[in-house]
Structure formats: C-alpha cells, structure tokens
Length: 552
Image (tube, one colour):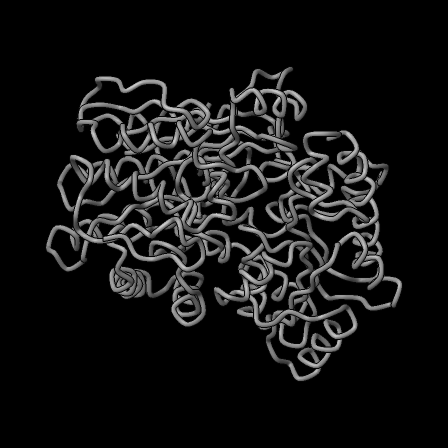
C-alpha cells in the first residue's frame, strides 16, 4: 500500500510488495516516476525541480505512461518523446523497458526562446537531469556532492575543517535545498537566502534547515554566534539574493565561502528579479516574459558583482552549476568568468576516475533495506574514506524523502560490485523488495556542458556532445532498464546534453547481468572520456582497472 506523504498529500509514496504491473522491472519504473512527484517542488503541475524540470509533459501524458507501464510485457519497450509516450514497441526481454529523449532540439534552434515557444504549444518539455528520467530522490541526490565541495575547500584553505567558517549561498529549491544540510554536516555556519518563504519552510520541516531568521541583522547575528563558537548551523533568510549579497558586501562582512544555487538558469520561470514579487512574476511569464529576462539579468549582474567583490576580498567563490556567470556576463559583467565552476575547481580528479553521484532506491519503501545496504557498503569498501565517511554522516543526518534512498560517490567496478551484492540480498529475501540503481546525469560519461561539467577540458573538447550520446547507446546495448537522453530547456537550452540510466536489482540472474554490464560500461566510458582528453588520473585508472581503451 502507498504511504501517506505529508509534504505533498495528493502524491503518496509508493511502497509494499503488491505489483500493479506485470513484473518488477515495469513496477520499479512506475514507482520511481511516482516518487519524483512525491518529493517534487510543484507536483500538481508535474514540476519536480529547477522551475520547469518535469516528470511528464502534461497530465494526459503522465496517465498514458502509467497505463503503459502497468500493462506492458517484458519484451516491449516504451518510447517517450519529451515527456510524452509515443510508442510501445516489440523488442525483447534483453532490451530496455523505457527509452526516452527529452528536450533535444537541433543545434541552431536550441535557444531559450524556441524552447519556450515549443513548450507553450505543448510540443516539448524539459526533464532537467533526473526529473524527467524519474531518478530524483529529493535534495539528498546532490547533498554528497555539495558536501564534498565544501570539504575540498576546507582541505585547501582552512586546515581541513569548516568549523568557525561562514558560508553564504542562495536557493532552497529541489537542488539548492541540499546546501544548508551539507554546510552543517561540513561544520560551517551557513546562511541560505531564499525568495520563496514556502520553500524555506519546506527545507526546515524536512530537517535540511535548522532555522529561519526574521531579517538580515538577526541572520548575521546567528551566523556570527555560531561561527565564534565553532558550531555548525544553517540559517535561512527570506529575501532576494541580488539585494542581500550586495548589502553584506557593503557592510564589509566577508564570508569564507560564497556560491549560489538559485534558478538563475531560467529567467522566465526561475530567478526572481529585484522589486518583483511572486504574483507579479507569475503574471509576466505569459504577459511579458521579455521584461522578466531583462530585469533578471540586471539583478543577477548585481549579485555576481557582489560575489566578485567577495572573491577579491579573499572569499572562496564558485559557480554551482546554474549558469549564473553566463547570465551575469550577458548582463554586462565582463569578468563574471573569473569565478570558477565547481566541477573543474574541486571535483574533476574524481570524475577522471568515474567516481561520481551513484544512488539506489528501496522500491519496497522500507528504510530497513537502505540500512542493510549501508552496512554492506561499509563492509565492502572499508578503505574508501570518502564513502565510509559519507555513509556514517548520512545515517546520522540525512532524512529520507519519498522512497528511502542513498547516494554515495563510487567509481568504476565499485558500483557494479555493490549492485550485484544487493541483487543477491534481494534474491535471498534479506531485503524487503527490489532496489533500483541510478546516478545523477552529472557523471563522467553522462554530460557535456561547456559551462559546467566540461569547462576548460585539457584538450579543448568542452562542447563535444558525442560522449553522452555514446553513453546512452552503450547503455541500451548493455540492457539497462531505462535509458534517457536529455538536453537543456529554458535558460539551459543549447548549453548541455546528458544521459541517464536506471537498472533494477530484482534478484534474478538476468538483473545480475544487466547490472554488471550497464554499470561497468557506464563508468568505463567515463574514464575513457577523460583519458581521451589527456587527464593522467584517467589514464592511470585505465591501466589499474584494465579498461579496454582503444588508443591511437
């Protein structure tokens, strides 16, 4: 039976042993689609996160997907085009259950204005990264990545700890909502600015945010109190980051770390300009979107100018992957790209070895399944300090949203080894039900984005999108259960292409084969991508792991 969902009452959390579909492969994907809405930001409109990242194109499309998943046989493949099912094709039991292509436009047409026009006609929808591919698990999906960024900064700049350090950021939506908990877990005093009071309350209610301040003065006072004591604390402040950041700079207060995770990528449906309330913005989205774009860029220019002031004063400042530098540059801030992007600055050595945001979801809905897998991870990888530290922290601090799930940054060979052990636990009945394995699209082989994932590649291959395309094809050939190919929508239009994958551990021998091939080929191609670009870490990984890289 589904569990009640206090966050989104009309969207229960799928759970239990009873199937509505003809098998667990189909049922798993149905539950994952339901789950992204259960933990989504605006499920009534099918929006999961990032202003427009949707689980399906519209309600009719959603209902048709549900119908297909509940009636299809295992030798069929459901074909989804930008959130709308278009075909249920006879393939084989070895083929993916679902393949999807979301928001892919031809090069010269891949622009924000074309996306919005097509979206208004009901011809396209943006799947974000994990929203449209039904892999989103709430803010936990990005929390370890955020935590690892903070810890890399701590190691480089602050003696390995953020105790007594002030972090300033903004955005408490589906992605940005991970920041306060990640900051607190890293030991910092973190101030998170959010324009929407409902989002701030949601993060507090689910345990990701400690408290909400009434105004900037009280927020800064609480941050200073925690900083002086070396205590970890997360404080939310309802306000506009484009006003708050310059005000903090004007007061001569210099945070230790500054970033932003607002929806700066989308100036129509995301970022709120200075002087605009939410109701006015909602009206202008249909009446005068150009006004919002102009005002949004002007506001972002002010915010990024303040971020550059902080950087010059000694703050560690980085772009957290929301195109805020790109928007600021378009708004007249010529030196916006003096701010580095988080991937290149902190995480690329991990991506070179295909160590990235791997995740698993307990389809039973029973948290004890995740607890057992936590124990298994600690047993299997005792020398992996990133993973053992994270699992220990996550068990104490990270609340589940929707289906119980866990994320852990594992690399080539590690992902498949864990998944196959879990599949054996499913087969033996030690777990209450099957487990779905997936990852963020922001992974070694999974994304081309010249302003985020692939910025400043050694060989200049930043904009080459072949790799996620190859990844998607390889995953289909490897018999993954779901394969998704996404490109950017809204302000991200024309900036990125990504591939996503989901494989279900249902305890069968066939699942064991799918898990082994899909996960190893996915990470293997990721290592090859970075080795091909000239990264020594990736070349070392190829040699040590025996990855079959064809070198010329």
